[in-house]
Image 1 (tube, rainbow, N blue to C red):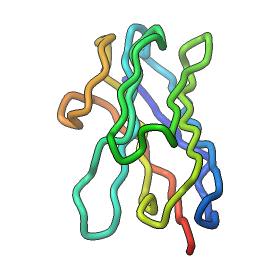
Image 2: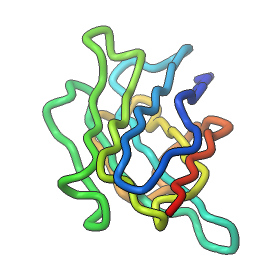
Image 3: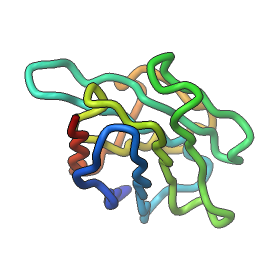
Length: 124
C-alpha cells in the first residue's frame, strides 16, 4: 500500500507562483511519481512526472518552462513548483505513484495510487 498526501494548493493571481508537495508513505521504493490535474467538466490530464532517481522528468506542453517537478533526496516527497500561473491552470491537482516502476509515464492508467488532490485556483 502507498499513501499520498498533497499540500500547497490555494488561490493565486495570474502570473504568480505556487509550490505543491506530495508526501508519500508505504511501499514507495523504486516508484516513479506524477502530477495530474482535473478541472470541472474536463478529463484528468497529465502535468509532469519524474522517475525514481529524479534524473528523468516529463512535462505536458502546456506547462513546459513554467512548472518544475522534483523529489527530495530520500525520494519520499515530490514537489511541483508552478511559476507564471495562468487562469487555465485552475484545477484540482493530484499526485500519483507507479508502485515499483521506476520509469515515469504521462498516462494516468499507468499509476497505481492517487492522493486526494489539492485545489489550485488562479484568478485574473
